[in-house]
Amino acid sequence: MSSNKKEVQLYTAWFCPFAQRAWMALLEKNVDFEYIETDPYNKTPEFLAVNPRGLVPAIVHKGRSIYESTICIEYVDEVWQHEPRLLPTDPYERAVARIWVDFIGKRIIPVFYRILQKETEEEREEGKVELLKNIQSITEAMSEKEPFFFGENFGTVDIVLISYASRLFVLKHYRNFEVPHNETFARFHKWLEAAENRPSFKATMPEPDRILASYEKYANNTAQSELAVAIRKGTAIP
Image (cartoon, rainbow, N blue to C red; front, side):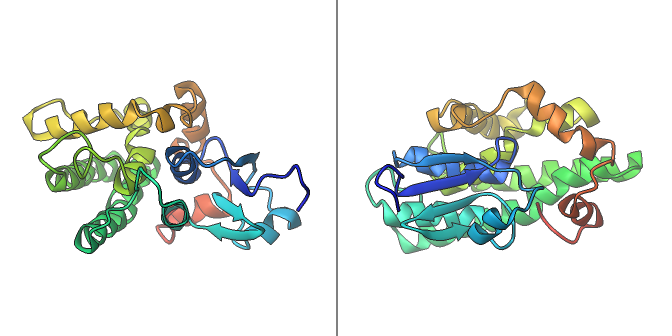
């Protein structure tokens, strides 16, 4: 490693919500790192040497690679153990956090893409009902003590959820979907406002117009990448 090379490198892509998670985690922990913008659709030999799956994010620390977004968050929290802690220190609460991270990956994100990509209005409407139900479920699991999932502390569940909750405006733009502003979702909207005001989020979220443009190919079903086809078939989560 050259003397002027930083100990930590983050391989990321500006448009990717998954990559945003690792980026936010590093910022939350005030880790000094090198930002390396990466095109995950151009799987160069150099990048495949960092992540054999060819996806972002990937963190290289002391010459060793870590990838998969939630694993990156946990790694950052475990290596840099100073405050703020991204996972609770209590084993039960850590398990709860992992349960809801899993829920987001299985019950929020796939439905987001289903609404965006399904071709019939009936299928899209079914997705909207399901997404609202699932958002209500995770909202009800949030601490009564505001503003974040576990209360005062911003952590892993918040990072994972905000990476897609902040992009719900994409569904409003393309599919006329939004989370109602009513009593049922009042806690969700308070959480959303607090999460979007987090400095680590503001520093990693692109302009709305750029985000909308990046999802246009999904809304028009013209995304032909290997990943996009897998999403459309329901055989992979992006």
